[in-house]
Length: 219
Image (tube, rainbow, N blue to C red):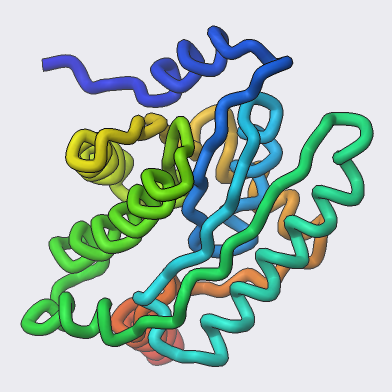
């Protein structure tokens, strides 16, 4: 079985879009650095509403920090590119709901990052994006999560397609790390001085990252 190329699938969709009549996209965002490239790339083809909803971030101060930083980035893009490139990205700040993630993660606390806990976490966030997209009459929904080299794009797209079928809303295929997307996101993060954390967001990934640092310092 040939491995799917989600970037080529996305290229086929964007290549058929009438740029004078852009479809509406509900884009779930995990943070400003990951969104930096995705927003600029997708805004050429879509009328974007950006949803920040990440119950895996159980620290309220961290949740707020990332939400404010994402909103700051969107405001910059709208101001810098609206007139020239017709960019006007809308922003939705999702509710702070750490209990949703913690209930899901019971019994999975010590799984390594990239395992079944992460799969279920992707599903929580994609389901919320699909709900917003369905209620708002969007043409597509997708997430920035696939830009990370640490995230499983096959899982993300499989979940998105399954939930899209469930809600009767089209999932936009993606593997945003392609075309040097991840590299470009790091460049944009530096350019705009974005707050860039060194762990995914949940307390378990933060714990594992802290332990890795301790292990390296002991060597």
